[in-house]
Amino acid sequence: MMTAIHRQVEAARRGELERVIARMLSGWAVLGDPQTTRGYCLLLPDPVVTDLNALVGDARQQFLDDMTALGDAVLEATGAERINYEILGNVEPALHAHVIPRHTSEDPDLRRKAVWLHDWTLAPVVDADALQLAQQIAARL
Image (tube, rainbow, N blue to C red; front, side, top):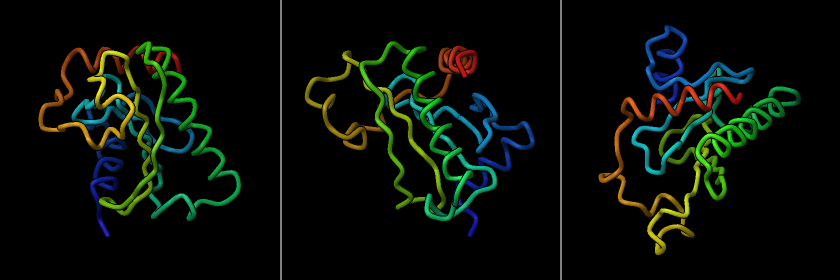
């Protein structure tokens, strides 16, 4: 099954995915689009697998280590209050990890709730400022 995750990984391999932050040992760190919170990123495995349980041994550990390293870099680059990590796969049935910075500037009613409750239609798309932030994140990886 070809998912959006597969298409993004293929575009990253070809150098055609503008949102790429860095190639990591387990896959690709990319900016999320839209930027629901400033610095929202994803880790996409390469090769794509169905879910975390499909990875075994060192490959599973590497994906989780890369996810955490990406979170550390996002935290430092954005000055966020904390990082939320989510691996869902309900909409796109292919492994991908959401790395979500949570900022004190968020609406207080939403700041402590899941980011999925934000109005995604109001979130900014990836623009020049987000791409500059991606470079700052990459420099910390």
